[in-house]
Length: 143
Image (tube, rainbow, N blue to C red; front, side):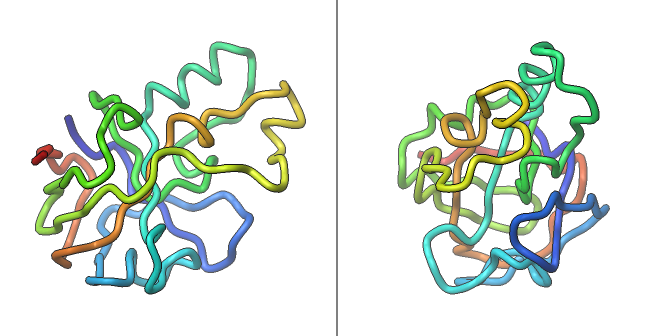
């Protein structure tokens, strides 16, 4: 289980761009990201497996950050983690606060094929211990 990509954007509602390393701040989220703040959805995670599932449906141009996730993971069924689970990633510690989300405005991907994985397979965390996270960092689940 590892980090495939760290993604950031300075505006909400747009795909995020990948960065090699991110600084995660306690009770805030990814430094410089538009979704960061003192709330329960500081950091969003989505598995590369979920992105690949959408690619198999024929959606072209999908890559990490396209679903506005901050961390793209590999090897972990995120949506099966119970709320309250802890994830040690790099120097950071996250607590799972929400599984999936309701999409009030249907994204371009939903408009294209009538489905999207983020509402059911994406998760949200809050940062309990801040620090640096890099691509390829190992993810350790602590329940």
